[in-house]
Image (tube, rainbow, N blue to C red; front, side, top):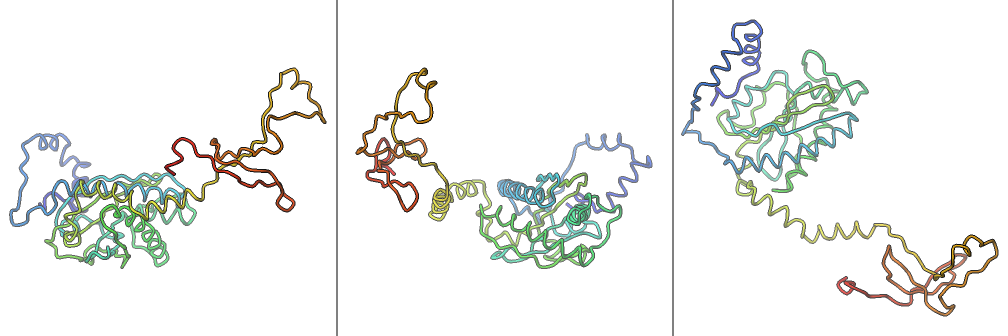
Length: 333
């Protein structure tokens, strides 16, 4: 399993070997065509099923969309975020794959126990900071640790990102993410023992011309109490059930009650010829088909809903509703 994940140093050595000709692209293609044997350690079986991995993928697709919307609006630039992969591996393998320095945010998912890691590529972090400070969003050529001011700005952005994380996880469980600390050295970030299994959600991120990865590391111990809910069946059924909850219905009703609709009082109608219309001048009188003592028709939108009488309220023209008209499916209202 450890051979599946390369450290940053190993990646740099491989790229260097390709550029110097020590290793050719043809050799790599030949190796890929050979039969692959995947080592399986029965002492450390996979903790997450394919269905649970699929559910986590869909959850974080929603998180990627919410985060994309937030950053696009906040930074006023083109942002593109997609879920690249969802994998399970040991915590040690994940830590070994991170460069130094990194921007590693440790946060809690209350009421779930334990800590979770949000690792953001330094180029992405510096691009965000550069945009917030009024720059073009170009990341520095050489990664470095954050200053105190940059760390304060980063904490504020991450706290907002965790609100999107909370919204995405509502489909499965209600959580309250809370940022604990930001670390730069991966070796100083030990939230679980090295051999514990974790799930890694990788988001491919592009801000302007800067690209990088955002990794979310969730230990199995954190998700263990809700493993039964991490299924596509539960995820879909909970989403449909939530639509009929009383609080959801009340929220929709409150929004409808604040909607503006036109009210039109119809004084009456008259039919004339085009010649008569062309001959109208100031002072002419048109006779309507409504008698003076009859009620007028009040339309709500395009529907005839009430009858009313005209009058005055103070210095303004007003109407008084005298009758409610019921037609069609109005009995069901």
